[in-house]
Image (cartoon, rainbow, N blue to C red; front, side, top):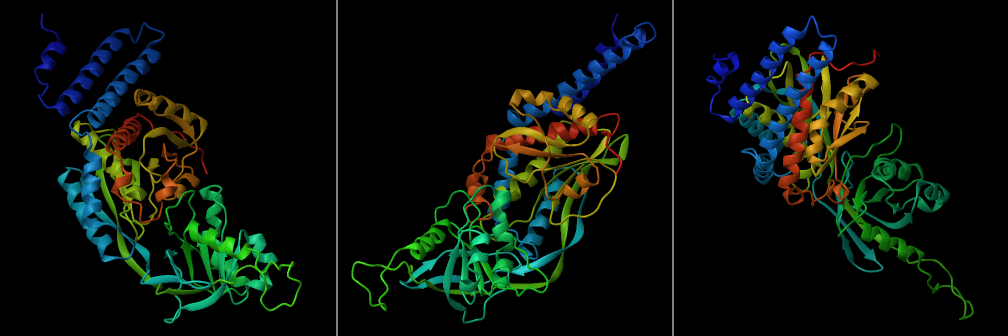
Length: 489
């Protein structure tokens, strides 16, 4: 006698996508028939039903991994990203180049067969770097590399020529406040960690202005340098004079500190020849910056979906940001995160899968308030070899996510508490579960916000693994029967 399952196999298509969907359906159909017979008499029915769903989910997860790592989608996210950043380069907010890059992405997402592809209008700040230069004029002529900080004001056309005061901390600046007046303050802070050291980049201009300094130069926030400055955001405070601010290299910050500390003889003092006075070498520099702020302008978040078949109004979000700083190519920060998020949906699409909930990719330019999110995911710390899925949620949700990521053990991806992502922070603070990707990012801040952030930093194998991990978590959560539990806030 021909069984129902045997008849069903005649309808399995030859494509990989069809096979995955059909095989998963056969597995689940078989278990449904079996458990329907056992349902009334078997006290462990619910437990076995959960096990059957686990088998089906694990099978689909492995198909996603195989497609991304060894199948037709191998290196796809890497190649897509390379074409994108080689074509458009850096994509700073408020620029025509970013808008052209967004148009390109919308076209590519539609070509990939994704649904509801559109740009979501947002307002973004506009700041233009312009030409900039920094030259030591005394005790010798020495041009120095620098990058102005985002939102900084510029200098007068002729620049600012002033003596330099080098300090190692905000505390030292306060102690030397009288010496700082009228000087360009150089912060030679040691790199401890990004979260701790970035305070000097963010607040250096304000602290300089408080003591009467005319500009601030910040040692780049990085543990490593090959004479490479790193840019980033900085903040002004109300009622505090806005002074120009920029980052310089580790090498130049340390050089000026050594010069300032160097013991030299004073040529103006009449003293015995066996005495010396520690005055340090006088350092004079000329700083020129054309940096200028403009009114906010319109831009777009880039959005695409795979609509859920059962709960389409509920959303699992995967994301990275499409804009970048105006240096390098923005391949690492955050082209990689944006493109593995696209790849997560692309893998699901290529396998012919459709989850219960809507899968949405957002390539951010700016955050925008949205509701009814089941899980928000962001990759913004590099797409090096993946180590763990980081998660923020209540204990029940954590238990579910730990089960969801078990298939990722085959690619050595585990679980860690606490998700991290500036774009998804507002939702996590509101109680929405959040996830981020932890990778082997030891060298992330070598390239961060610098001219070194190019496609050369990226690795195709690592991006395959990141894409697989991202897709498995997103699809599996989107296909659960219930939303992840959360605490009411």
